[in-house]
Length: 134
Image (cartoon, rainbow, N blue to C red):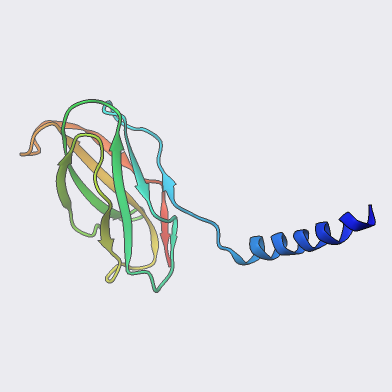
């Protein structure tokens, strides 16, 4: 029994140190939204002052192509960072919103979905989890 006490104690100390000094992963997927079952991923839920971009992507489970207009929107006054447009069948590649001119606050990636490239046939809107920019 005494032989096991020393290795168990050392292992406990090592694990405590590892858990104490590693930062938790704060990436987040939203739930599935709209009739096209779209969800939105962001690489973090909190961004520091030194962060340069917020990375995002969208994914869907239904068939067919959708067209999108995505914006990083401040939740209290709906100001946005400008739109990124494109289309996808199952998911977008990882995209970036620059944070260089973004003020501190709470934001969401908001994706408006359309069935046509001229953005006349609106399907719905998918939103990321709230993200906080310091």
